Length: 581
Image (cartoon, rainbow, N blue to C red; front, side, top):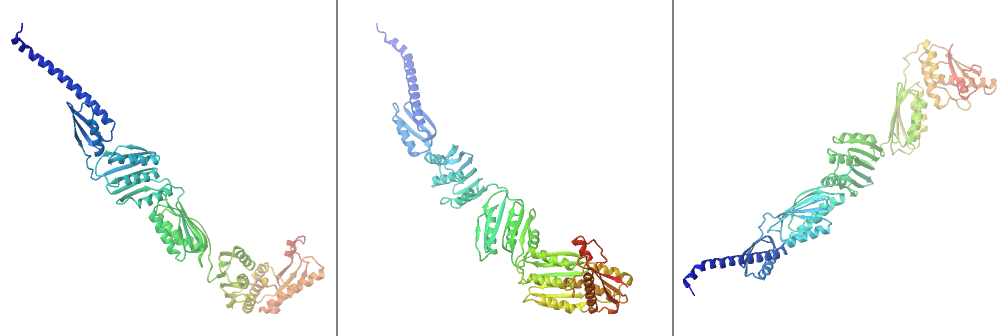
């Protein structure tokens, strides 16, 4: 039996049951749709960054940052075609505009990190591809942003290419400006990196460069000069210093060619490297050919000087000009052609000073030996080897030293082909003989200017000292011509000095005795000894000694002072002696 009034009692609970069932069904539908939409979005992760999905019934709303407008539109169309989806609301937003738009590429070893800002996904893929082509592994931590330069792809490729050359480095783009830093492994890489930075992509201004060149040790720079050509090689601390040194080299050789092969490197010595290298170039300019080398903080110079340039002058100049912290090493410079070509010998007291030039070491040694033969005091040798000697120089210098030996004091100077002889002869008759003999001995083309006098006789010698003085002078040896009729030229300084001693002690009678070794007969030896003693006596008379004071005697081998069983002993026995009567 129907009771309609009781139905109303059951309707509210039934409605509640229906509502609960509907709610549970909607939650299931929304979860199902949401899961499927999220899965679809996950399959295209580069379309929307930080994608969020909201489902209301069968209506879907997608929010996040739309990395690509086209990709986002296609993705939402795919979502809308999902089963059960009634509508899709696009709640995505465009990436924020970055101003300035900064993106940074930093390399550490084989890894390349991208930070800062980056545009759409496709552009990032191109950066990855460029890094992979250089063997680099990329770590992308950049935030998506709008406002990228129109040539972003070219900028990124440019940056990757630069960093591929550097061991470690960093490139930062800020809109249209660029800053770069890093370490170059070689000079070639350093040069190519700087060259690339001089030609950046269109519209980009290189704002800062801190690319460090390779470290080298030792740090060597050199300038090599051959004729008018100069070759610069080695390393410099910076390109500006290298360019400045090349300009100075060119200025020092205006008619020549400068080849600049220097590279930039780190490791230069502390101090003013540019000033030290400039000093090297200044000294090199004084050489006809040669090389100046800076090895770390030490400068060495070698070569051949220009006219009148000596090694000593180069050394003094370089030492004075080098900046603090730099030292002068070996200087081996052959003196340049000298003009005028000079040589001098100055005789004063017990010293004979030689100066000027000689064409080579052998000639220099010959002149020193020649000086020793005519002088038994101290010899100071300041002669330097230099080119430019006139023809006949050696003969002229030898004859000049022979003439100087006949002076008690004086100087002989050669200036090209002019010989000047000044001084005092031992005896009054000698100046004319000395000048005449020198004039005859000089090679063709040489001229002589002589200003000669004689030693005064007012310095008297005590008769008690005379024998010792004569013996000391005679001990130097007196040599004769083959027939014993004249005194050998080499012995004229000795007999001149003997004459002066006798003239300064005028009241003493002297016996001149000749002695020989035991070779030959006694009669022959006495005859030879007597002729030699007489030859000395005749010379002394011509020198002004009173003949009444002198006698000549020949003792032959009767009075030896050494054994005659050796060449040395026989040489000692062949002598001239002076005795007080």
